[in-house]
Length: 176
Image (tube, rainbow, N blue to C red):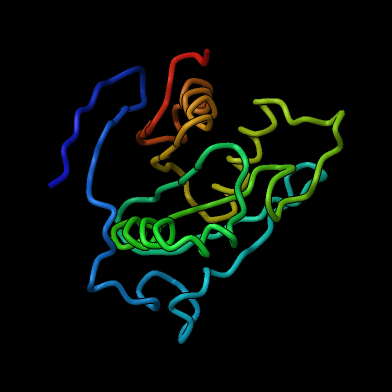
């Protein structure tokens, strides 16, 4: 049974929730946009250009909610599907939402960056909005975990019109 608490802050709604990560037994690959006949396969990876970098992303699932999921800082949208619990979790999210995953600039399948080109937070926000735009989403809920919580809170503060809500999981106000 999900438990949740919500608070209002400016135009964005912040939600803290816990729920079971068990996959829905009624889940089927076609209903969430996976390749037919490849239920254990990852969704199709697409690329969008942000500045001079290509950003890898996946968009799949169905439902009334558009949900952008940003786990920590280093990701790979295809490798995450090789972890059984992560794949189960993503399938569960995609059972009620159109889910968007992406690799940040310099991470995973997105274009690499040089050691002297570490993306700024503003560039990461621009990349995130570019991915959201590529999926045709005007306003999305954003679910962040760990270190990505800074991205979510900054995006909510600087572009509140683009987020309907922000979910922070395992986030801290500052690191020690």
